[in-house]
Amino acid sequence: MGSAAGTCEIVRLPEDLLSAALALTTPRDACRAAAVSRAFRDAAGSDALWARFVPRDLPPIANGVLSGPASPSKKERFLRISDRHCPVLLADGLRIRPATKNPLLAYGFESMWLDRGSGSKCYMLLARGLHISWGDACYWRWMDLPDSRFEVAHLRNVCWFEIRGKIHSKMLSRDTAYAAYIVFKTLVESSGLDYPPQKASIDTVAGKKKIRKVCLQSYEGRHVNRQVTVPLTPEYNKSYRLGHGRNPVLPQERTDGWMELEMGVFYNKEGGDGEVRFSLLQTSRTSKRGLIVQGIEIRPKKLG
Image: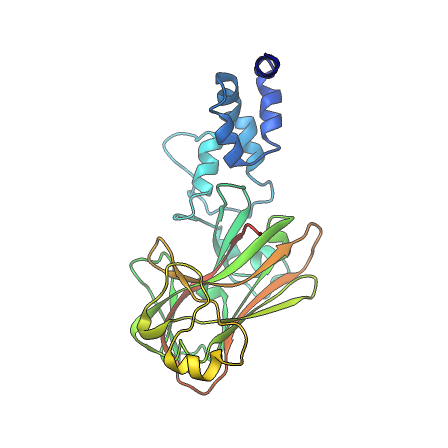
């Protein structure tokens, strides 16, 4: 009886108070609360609530991206911005301008979206916004693919392999754990991407550097569908696994047909002001070819 009475008292609250309470949760929790009662459903769909879930410090979005035949509700706008498979394009002014002092204009962000569960900001640092060593036409070429909205980088042939990217901490959601992923494909004729393994590193605002061994390709081009650490090739077993500690992290397949490889995890603490830097490096003299890079994706990750 006490529990039922308490529930009745809650639903008597004005909609604006219920919306204010739901705003202290997450978008996922608000959607779940809509099933509690009619009062909760109305509060969970209110513009006041969903306006709170869209960060006030969103970077400028390209004109026309969110336009439609009718003005969308705040919830519809959130759902559009949080569509990971169709990230919103940022304003033209946010393309790479190295000379500018504005961090929003310096890092080559082309698309972003909100994590639908938490509302945290996510970004894709496109290949054009990355620093690629030996990135001239002799070793890499730029191309368009039908399954990519953006220009991608195709590795023709190189020995020294390094890809670097960076993001300003103020572009990210505060007090949030993030993971960075290199998003890529490999061609049938690719080689040199399975052994020796590569090194992925993340330099945080706090000055900490995290390094892990990773491998872009498993044996004979066969990828795995989950992130695992298993031996790769007979050569790898003999030359690396014995006496060299942990096996490298392998890629996993995405729903969009691309592969992603987790480069590392970092925590964006509130009040941090500086750059987070990412690097993928392999400096052996072995020839490497057949890699197609779309960019580096940065999105929240649950820890534990």
